[in-house]
Length: 244
Ligand SMILES: [Zn+2]
Image (cartoon, rainbow, N blue to C red; front, side):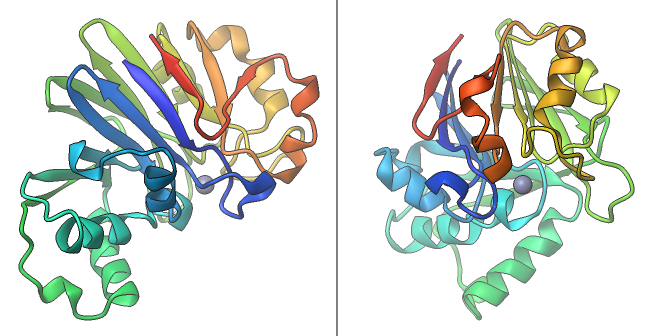
């Protein structure tokens, strides 16, 4: 697998970074993990052909993880003349939120007949789903919110990629990351404890328990970015590539 960070920032563009979006290449197949509102800027900036992306999976339905989907779909229809199917995977609530966001952003577009098939798959925590030869397991990333947030563990041909967007510290992250070739985890803050987000110190305190061969932190906010020089863990940059 090859992973390229197309957006490693928080919701607010801290440090000039684009919002969460990761391109994963698994053999012939390319897919996106998270699709923040700036995803189309990322794809154009890094010369990625959207027609080669067959799958988009989002960890949650907040704008900085999901907000790029309307632009991707409308670009596919109007500019890319897309013919091939695309599958959207996300937490339960995806279908309703998709309709709401599309209607808010481009009123009336939902009534158009698409030139391609759009398949939407909703997953709950502790689900398993197989798509394109990849086995996807999900874990609950935050509790006590009306929106579901998922941690993904993606296994294919002996390789394991784990990913967590907005996340409370939870032992579910340990389960999802165990034995992974790569764990990409958010670290919005360095030391500040905020509900539904991880911080660097908590991640480091649990680093050996994670059991991943490599950990890269992403989704970094302003406070976190001020400590980049002092980190003992690899961190994402927009454009950075990691192969395993
Ligand atoms: Zn976020």
